Amino acid sequence: MPPIAIRRNIVLAAFAIGASVTLLPGSGRAQSLSADDANQLRSSLLGDLEVLRGKFVGLAEAFPQDKYNWKPMEGVRSVAEVLMLSAFEGYSFIPTSFGGKRADLGNQDAAAKLRALTDKAQVIEHVNKGFAHAKSELESIDAATLGASRNLFGQMRSATSIALVVYGDLHEHLGQLIAYARMNQIVPPWSRKE
View (cartoon, one colour):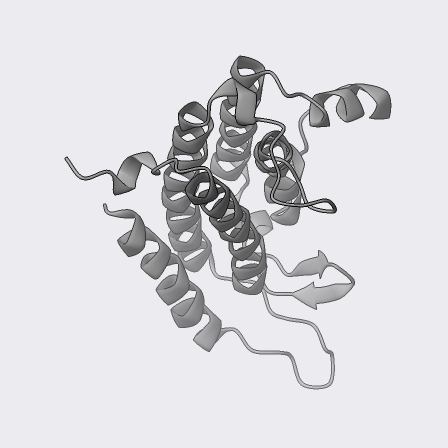
C-alpha cells in the first residue's frame, strides 16, 4: 500500500473509531475501544510504522557519514540526533504510549551514549532495532490494553488520540530529516526520478 494511503488509513480509522468513542459524561475520561476497533487500529499503526521505518532507514543510508553531525543551525538536532530520536521512539515512546514495554537499553548512562551515536552503520542498526521493538510490542499487546484510554502528557486520551499524537510526532521528525536532506542536495530515495 502506498505511504499516503497508509497514513490516510490511520487518520480515517482514528476518526471512524473516534466517532464511536466519546467522553463519559462528567468523568473527563475517554472510553476504551472494542476489540475489533483496537485490532483495526493496530493494523493501521503497524502499516504506517513499516513505512516510517523504511523512510528513516532510506534517508539514513542516503546521508553520507560526513553529514551525520550536520545541522542547519545551533539549537536543533543533527542528522544523527534525529535518527537516534526515531530509534528511541521505537524503543520507548511508541510501545509505552499504547501500554507496551520499553526496550531494555541499560542504565541512563548507556542510553545517553546511544543517543550520542554518530557512526552511520550503528545509527542505522539502532533505527531498525527501535522500529522492530515497537512492531513487536504493538503486535503482542492485547486488544484491551491497546484500545484502553491512558494518560499521555498529563491528559487522559483515547487510543485513537494517542495514535494521532504519537504518529504525528514521528511524521514531524521524518519531515525534519527530509528538510535536512534537501538542504544537503540529497534526494529522498522514494522521490528519485527513475
